[in-house]
Amino acid sequence: MGFYFPETIVDTEDVANEINLSEKFYRNIGVKKIFKPSEKDHPSKMAYESAVNALNDAGTAPEKIDMIITAVFKNDYLHWQMGAWLKDKLNAKNAVTLEVKGGCGAHFQAVELAVDQIKASSGINTVLVICAERLYGYGWPTFLSSGGQSILIKRDCEQFNYIGFATNNFIAYHNMAHIPHGGTASPFTQEIGWEGDSFVENVTVDKDMYLKHIKPVVFCKFADVTEDILRQTGYLRQDIDYMVTLVQQQNFDERILKAIGIPDVPNANEFKSDLGHFSGADSYILLDKARKAQKIKKGDLILKIVLGGVSWFASLIRY
Image (tube, rainbow, N blue to C red; front, side, top):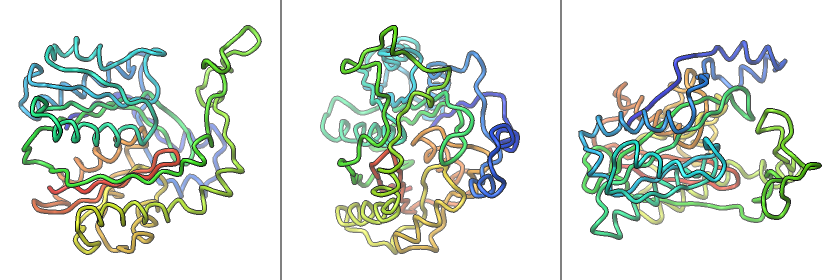
């Protein structure tokens, strides 16, 4: 694994004061520090730096990479594939490239795709999965941060072994949030353009849809996707030694574990306060922190669980 974070660290209390966030809501989030990108900290730069760190961590030369998969929500440019640029920049001359577009769930899907490619093809042995996001400030329901994260997935790797993946989609409500203009159905015109400076200002959110149909089942869906992966792999709840998820509200991990039915399982919540949330790759940063802090040991079964939009994802990893 390799990471890159901007040099500037901001106290979220200052951000909360700027936007008049209530003290109660601020405390419930529980994130104290986030990373603020500089003018040079675009996704491509952060992706490259994290990729170099991952290659160094694995002791792997760039020409050994068979595939590069990038997971990105906000790229440097519209319709620009960062993976092709990274292939050239890293001199990964033997790699094919692919981009998975989306939010928090995209990184999970990119990892599952990487594992599937290795299993399916004798010619693919090493896949570099990269996620880098230039997000910053307040976003619902936590503080958004910035950084780059890369993992090198290798055949027969002895660090972390992927056992299985599961997804639970709530397809009926996929249009809860979207940007209505700028695509082929509604192109930008002189009358219809980009509003303001913020990406968030241009997102249309159906709050009623969320409150009526999605919010009531968020944690039930975590239980469903966990049940699915346990059924697939033959493991039991009591076999799980550790749980890792996204950086969200302070009690997010606790509520997930309660819904799953294993409330006492150790988790990575203690490492979240100085990170913030920038994508589904949060979980790998937290996993790295847990390993370095010796919160997990060899042989442990780790449940990684992620939410992205109206999709819930789970994977089992043997350390």
